[in-house]
Image (cartoon, rainbow, N blue to C red; front, side, top):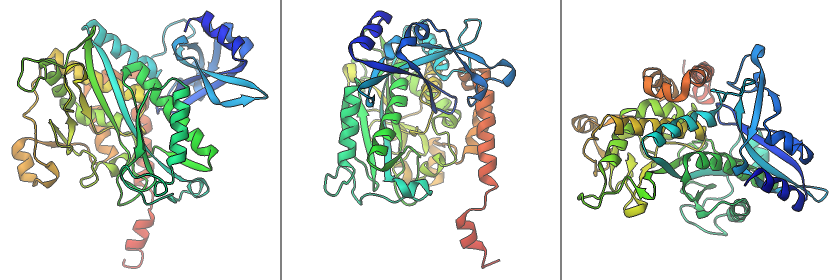
Length: 441
């Protein structure tokens, strides 16, 4: 939409307030709400905020920051009305007082890598498959996970007691312009998945951030708590966010080559090789929590091993069967707690590195890696993803390319935040330790 279109929509749709949104380095959506009468000032990028109060932004002595709304992200929030007046949303880029983009803005981090891809002639398209849990709200506020059902994969009501909430989430997203491809109950109790259509990398990151806000808002209206925590239930599958990716040159899928036996291009395989080369460092961003590594364990459908395959789902990367314009790779390791802008930035950077260096991936692994012995994996050269946040942090610190993708500002503050998170976790005394050790020792 153009600025003129936005002002006409504000007038014609009786919009009273505008939510200006942006994301901090940990992926939390922030916003400031302004009266619709201030839209000209907002669209001119004249709205200032205190960046020193935002996680990972700036120091107190350099706190003035400016929000520049992206007109293409204008949408009416279907659930927000006040006395008949509605609220609209604009996603913003963050700028310094001198008019330069703020290098600590995750959206800018992604845009910078997207621009690098464009210089090489590529556009990245991404289709996400985010999963989440619905728990009883009162219990969740006390830190307890009380599930709504004992349903499983693709079950329906009345066994799936979250179906009504999930349906309302889908309808709300559709009102906001999402093209929903599938919505269903997942494997674990109270676990759900909603898939929406692919888009370019920046739009997809915007959509993931919006999706999480919508899911939590609609759940709250039903007295429930929606969580994107990767592994809230012991002994059950965790929540992932598989990312289907392809690179396009104009209207041609650069991953497709009809003249090869598997109909995958050299570019596709180089892209895969780049992701595998940097997989351990990427994981610190795509799986950002202490809890993320309790999902990345064998036996719960989450990938643990740095490998790729045409069919089986035990490797980190799978190639769906469709070809032609639908040729793509599916990266299965990310989880829905990640900052989508940073996650897509480091993934794309790694893939482009593989293309630039003409890397060749190892042979695909069609056997079930979970059933292989350590010796068999070593013989095939199959590495493991990090087993903890601390291990992932070390891998990130040792990978100059992925640090470059994040930029020095984000990299330093992200690492600092994650080290603090790990240190707080490792010094805690858990209930399991007390039950296991208190009486014995």
